[in-house]
Image (tube, rainbow, N blue to C red):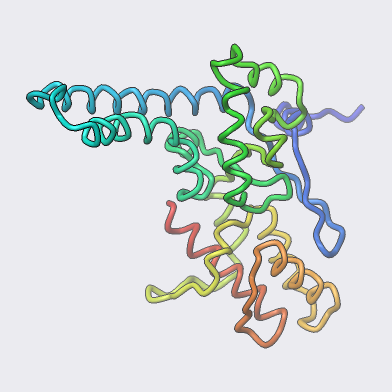
Length: 256
């Protein structure tokens, strides 16, 4: 009887979603566990708490706060509460789907097809925290327990999920057949940073085929569509895909 290692069994048990490429190849991405998401949330709450304490301390040091104008008081309230209320929305919008807590836990918010969430999706996800969070007894925790990809209401409404990020060691193995980037290398497609490791691995495997192969051109079209690239500088699909991988490598190195 064939035996299965603990790591292999764990891999099969992890909830995954998939992306179907132009070649009808399924790419799996692992959803973050409930424990990992809660750990990231606790880190973020700790940061928010530090902010609130710091602002309250600064306000307590200012004389005659009560006698200031109504506009000044509104400004103080916004300074205190706006960064806390919009904390996750702002971080995920401007930091590639990661709050500081998610970054420390190596997690990221993505669309269920693996692409980066739009502003509308992030706003929908953020607004439904009212239903998922403390106001309804953390109903989102129960929902994450019973959904396959550990999605809360906000994720399901926005079409998003929180995934585990791949390690840099795996990225190095995937990209070792390409030349090292020169110190003055300039990326052309910033959207390449939004690719997952599995997507890049698929591209590198496809690049081993003949440059004019139909599936190379089909995959290039799919990559342009998923990354919303409207202007392509390269004249061939093969060159475009190779440039995408090099740009991905550049951005991956920036995060190390």
